Image (cartoon, rainbow, N blue to C red; front, side, top):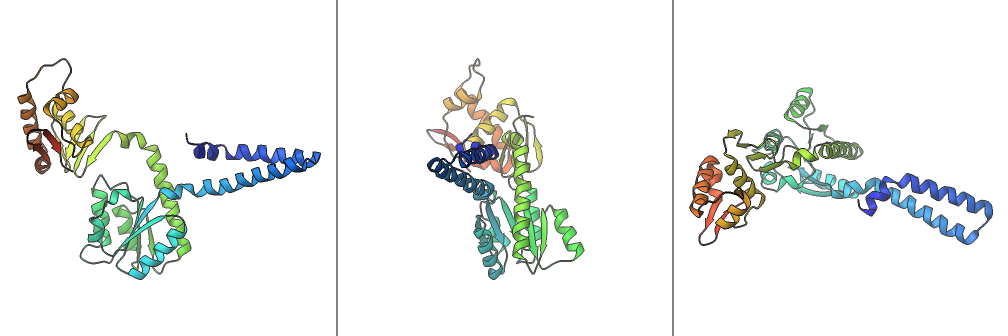
Length: 286
């Protein structure tokens, strides 16, 4: 546990000690020590303010809205709260970004060829981005519009014109809920390997590719999980034999080639990314 985390957890305890000590010094009139103690308590109070807002520092928010003025206003207000904010003016541009790096997406509905509803469906259908909370911010304020947005999987729905106080409060509420959900499911997330449409469950030993269950042998499963863990790194046949094959089994180098060929066929169009580096070995290109 870091020093900051330890102090945050036990802050109330330290403050009680500080105030109690301060009262004793006031009674006994120890002026010099009293001044030092006042400074100590003051520092604790400052730290309590820091600790209360420190969770925001790791949060990165993406705003997707075709109105630059709205983006600018939202960005300014959220950055003053300590968030890191990026803005784009179309869903098409947003979908080209590394979306899994964001903690929250604020999404307009009525945009160009790809609407906010369509983008939200794409996010929720992709295991790599399904966990990212979405808040719709739109002029569509009818009951049917709100229900549609929430049914898609949005975490909140805010109608324009916007109240910045309300936006900031709702953003913080959604992020707190999201953080709690991620903490409680941390072990489950750690047992999954996800690359685009490929999902490997390391506990259940199951694999799906674009929603289709794959029938893997134990060796094929170990090979694919090994390649996905070490994307773009080249491994020789000897490396693969040492890391993926049972230790008490003697096999020929050619056996590696045969299993790689089978694996390529089973993962469909992703098989093109399992490449050969002539003279060196194999790697999975991400």
